Image (cartoon, rainbow, N blue to C red; front, side):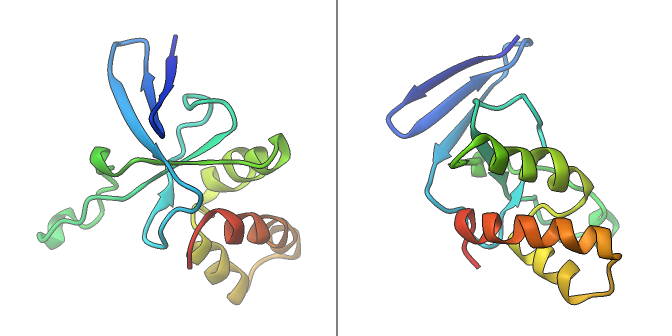
Length: 129
């Protein structure tokens, strides 16, 4: 069970194991952030963003470790926007404005392209870039 507390522009999210993550609430996430796909383990209506840890060692380049000190949250305008990002796109790799634009610029199936065209204006609203 999660507990959520909003205080001074931050969201304190505690999971069932007692781990607390602190998200800073912002209007737009910076371009170098990605959606942290934690599903329903977030405060209702907020889209979680994070930065990945960059390793100097090329052997560790494959890792996708989250910088826990970088957590941000953007309030979705409505349930549909939250669902488009968190349910229909972020779990499948479209987790940032840059990634959505990259996918649209490449060869994508028509059905995938339609979905990306739906989520593009949402990302343009919630992320710099």
